[in-house]
Image (cartoon, rainbow, N blue to C red; front, side, top):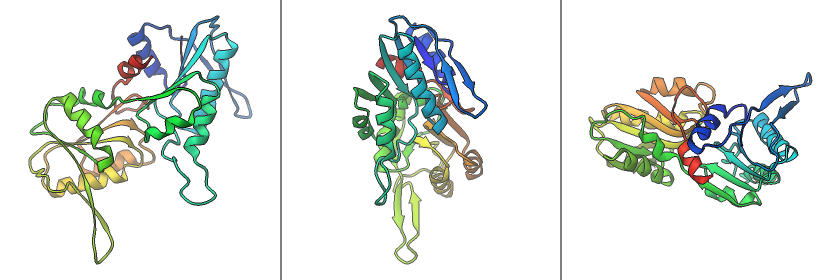
Length: 282
């Protein structure tokens, strides 16, 4: 039975269609003091698949509660799917005295699961912290589906570390080139400039691809560089559309023609579901 977190209901429903598994009617309550409470159907020996994007502290608590409720309801096995794993970018202590937050939250989730599936974690190294079998799956190729017809397309990642994602979208789209932006530091001022390197972007439709768009600052800077070089349409394709604060406005004012994302985080730009990818892992 699929047990969705309150922020992952559409993805869980799509997973039910993709897998044929039952979708559990989970209830979500709050006490007067703000504490959360979930309730799941009786499982009686059935496998439970908890589907919970942990984009907030509250969602982390809800995920732990769903796992525990599944055990109490008689689940034979608990598989936890993290469509989006919060805190995954805090994968190291940046200064002495800070936590490795990704490790801390992974350990907590691992205590209530028999297996964990994470969609496009920021770094695969986080998988070793769960304490139970954990695997990463990528929904990057799904981002090609909602793209329009593109003129001489170019798929660019913000840096070399994410170029595999750009290549995955390019391959799924079936045409175009893939590359990544370069960061160049001015010797006199020390300012860092983002450029698409030596790639000719003039007149070409460009898809800026990334795993996460959070504040939109990095992508907006990249789009500005493309506009200066007379690129055609500029689209942004990301797996996880966090879009915190005024990120959506930043992207629009930078000149982004369209933003497409998966439903790992359910947003108005969620143009395609990650369900088929997750279904294969289940």
